[in-house]
Image 1 (cartoon, rainbow, N blue to C red):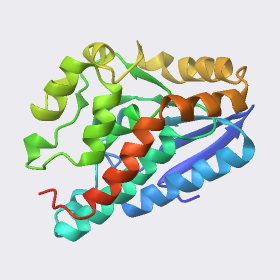
Image 2 (image 1 turned 60 degrees about the vertical axis):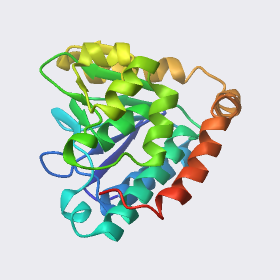
Image 3 (image 1 turned 180 degrees about the vertical axis):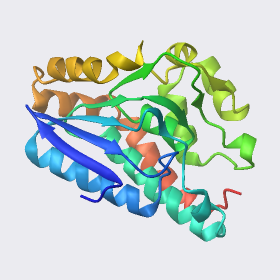
Length: 230
């Protein structure tokens, strides 16, 4: 593993910690490192916790890559979309312990997990693509439509509205909000409960429940590769 995503395994729980600068930007390298972490967790049969640095899960894609040209942006988003699909179909549960802001791709990490815990504080969670001049990609629309409430979907995707952690619970980005000091212990507590599941039944049920979404994502990933986002 590189330092962009550190991996640790303890008591059947694999923790992936994003560590890529002050906003934990999603680059090609970080996505590759994230995938290697999921590979290790899957091989170990471990429940996964994904987290970031104090105050930030991720601020989104690496802007240097996104501004390098239309094809560079399309290629990076395609890798991120494929990662989101993988998370949504991962055979073991994925819990995200969000330590603060989760914007754009950071928010899609929340929407791609099985359980999401945030922290109370002056943090923003949401999809700012329209605000920064980016047309929402088809994969993003499909994930947001499936995981957010109907009113929040319209506000988040079309209006780029950002939510407080408490508001993010009502919108569908988060399941629980705790104090920053409680975040990791709360995530481990949920992971311990998840470990009691039959992993075969969890995987089979997850794939049934999300079949329509996963099929839609397969088509959307292909479509997004042909359309400029900027």
